[in-house]
Length: 144
Image (cartoon, rainbow, N blue to C red; front, side):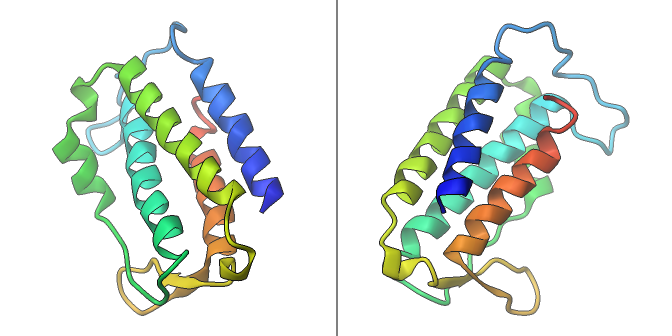
């Protein structure tokens, strides 16, 4: 878990440094693609969901928690949001995730929850945390 937390801390620092940079956050390659601003919004949504998973797994097991990412991005209107506010909110949520994971009860790292939308797919906290960071890096590769 230490490697995952260290990676996440590094990502938080790198993204916070993007504030004030001359980046076209609102550009969309096509109407079906997200802008960089919407990607940050999506990652903020992902942070909210995963924070809930990590906290709930400290005392609960085998629950299901998913979300409709496209619908959430559209409903939240991230394209109209201030990018600095989005980055700040994303960073604060991720700092809370770092706090939770850093102090995670060792006996609960193997607790599982279902993150699938169809067939049950139970994953451990340790797997979910590593996957969360990998998912984030996948989305940030074009921004960082």
